[in-house]
Amino acid sequence: MQNPFDNALNQIKRANEVKEFPKSLIEGLTHPDRQVRISIPVIMDDGSQKIFEGYRVEHNNKRGPYKGGIRFHQDVDMNELNALAFWMTLKCAVANIPMGGGKGGVTVDPKTLSKAELEKLSRGWVRLMAPLLGPEKDVPAPDVNTNGEIMSWMLDEYEKITGEMSGATFTGKPISNRGSEGREEATSMGGLYVFNSLKESLNLEGQLNVVVQGFGNVGGHAALLFEADGHKIIALSDSRGAITNEEGLDVKAVMEYKKENGSVVGFSNSKEISQTELLTLSCDVLIPSALENQITEENAKDVKARLILELANGPTTPEADDILFAKGIYVVPDILANSGGVTVSTFEWEQNLKNEKWTKEQVLEKLKLKIEKEAVNVLDYSRTNNTDLRRAAFIVAMERLLK
Ligand code: NAD
Image (cartoon, rainbow, N blue to C red; front, side, top):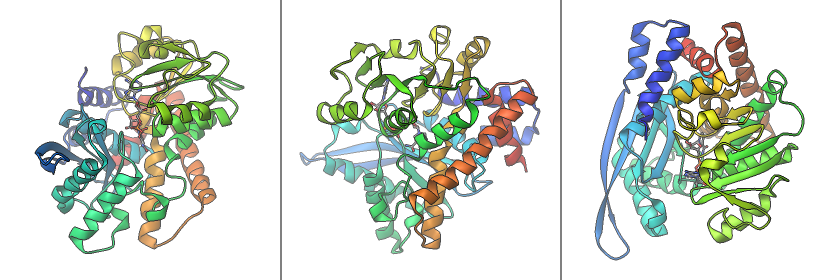
């Protein structure tokens, strides 16, 4: 698998070829401010002790506190987190929110842990990272295989250590525990707002066939929201496999089926296909919502979508970008397409700091206004400078970071 941080550095180099930035900015962005590695001891249910590797990368805080999710996955390593933290810095700048970039994680397959072990691991991560964290310093959130419940455990541990009420230290919390209305679906809702504000300019109007890779928080909500917006979801996948139905899948029913059976595979009224086939199905919109490096030099030539909306981080490699561009396939880059999540996380942070509670309508209206403006801004830059949307988004972000 390609090193995602190499891809991220390649992306910045490519943007810099369109508009040259001072070397000091490029070098600064190439080197994360701080990389922390920890060993988290956990007493397992059978009484044995196991040590897990944990990490936090604080990439850049020129525009605000470090901000970024915590990922629990067997493939997590420093390279992946460097890339994800780097993209957070760029994303917060393109979304124009007062946050910097960070990312954390633990190398673990959480499916192998009991709930009690998962809680001990989550609290252990916070015990060792606590000196770095805080509303003005570093504000984590959920990412792959973490959720509101884990944020609640983490916040509880942090408040025990500091002896202070400090809700704004974590975002993506449950609504019942100082979370924000609209946060759970914010990444996908932001993606839909971005898509809707660009579709006319990109000739993608009417009812469209949509394929979604990954059926977790982001992919699940994206499928529901695009379906509710009048589109047909013709294929879905998760880590165990993929399914398709040209007539359209009933997303809610697939969700219920997955809850009971652990996967989308086997859902009635659907045909099983391979995960690789899913990416090259004939469709209008392909929405990667799983992991990095999914659309690569190997399969990009076979992609038949008209537009790729990157709700995952880093799903397309730079080599694939060139192939897709040559084929006339639009790629709405992750740092714009999935910035709704961190935008509403910032709204959550703001509500916690001001001790306010905004309604869902208020949250989504603010998100819509903000993200649509930035989507059009990126499209305009790409058109004026005859470049792709990724380079345009990078340049918009880098101009703000430079200022
Ligand atoms: P999640 O853990 O809720 O879901 C991940 C999904 O991907 C699961 O359904 C899993 O089965 C599936 N998956 C894993 N490997 C796969 C494969 N090879 N093929 C198909 N499916 C596969 O995680 P999430 O929070 O939905 O995050 C998904 C992506 O979105 C990540 O790239 C994450 O960084 C990005 N993202 C998340 C947020 C957020 O708010 N949660 C915000 C911005 C970006």
